[in-house]
Image 1 (cartoon, rainbow, N blue to C red):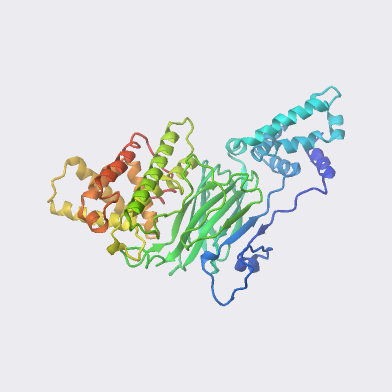
Image 2 (image 1 turned 180 degrees about the vertical axis):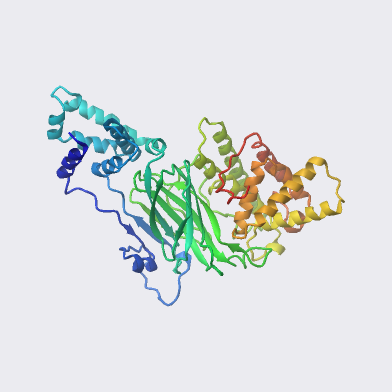
Length: 517
């Protein structure tokens, strides 16, 4: 019997239970009028004035319609694979896809429940014709739903996949400018996808990207004065396997978006950002719903669990911002919290390098994710800032790095410091890195600092350079005690933690460093 005939019989038996076509629902009023999709707004029923713009603090809820779960949908996707040439190959691909989607039990129950089809294909003494054996077999298959499988994604590396992308701007009601997007995974990365203005939803097909790890988004080139806009997060879903990823951001884009927040340069430009994937667990995406209620334009409350090795309690991107540590107990508790986050991030990296299988997507999450080491180091740099200097301004660690490098450069030119040969090489290499990073004008200060931390960790020089940074008078000017950069005990703790990673070789994906090498 041909494959087409089999699908026709399956569709005939379940014509009334077929899943509806894929739809996407938005709650942003601007998107509804442009895309014509149905909207479902969740929030307070109190009427608000339409003339007064809302801030991103109002929150939104984006609903992605679930993918069809009928057996015909997966069979259709398998039969269109061009690299498979035999029937047994199609059967194996179907099993792998159903196993990854946790639908193998359901599909087999549908197939084995068609008694007329079984009687045509199998003899009476066949295994699948025995009701008791069939029930026992399906019971064992059902137990496989407790595990996570990537057997289809990791096996068929050349299969063309369909991806759906949703750009969520939270409660911000402005128009989305023209942007470009690139998506990277464990197998390859997509080319730059240029999007016209007001395109919050789009689909693209590409050779299997694998397990998604990073997403870069930036303003389209050629814009003289990029507009200011807010990005809450981005959702990317594989329309074949159903794997869904959330890329949190919670940041503003545009020129001069951080004028009143960052200390140092009067105008900062953030035209490009790197987002790290957070795989969404199946039990959280059963209704494919994502809700956010941001506390501020730069911080949001995440809903839904994220798979990760680290068991650190979920925290915001910059927990130290907006907090006051005016009492000794608060400062001591905050130091303990940061030390715990640093220790868990380093332990997760050590476990990763000692494991047998190394995944590029997992390394990106352990380094740059919201529970990653880079964010933990950023917290250490933000703690203990001098109140008279940072008053009413959220600090940027990149400003501190630049001031330290200016001081060290001046000492090198005057030849006044008595440094060893190793220290001079360390300082010279760090100055080169800072100069190359500073040349990337599209990056904001937070992105530049993250690239600096990644490159110095890759070159096994971060722990040594921390000691030199703490030695400079810039540290005493900008930080109080206790702090990780002025207090010797805390500085030693941080340096020893980073020293433990020097035995490992960090192979960084170019997307993590925005192409800076």
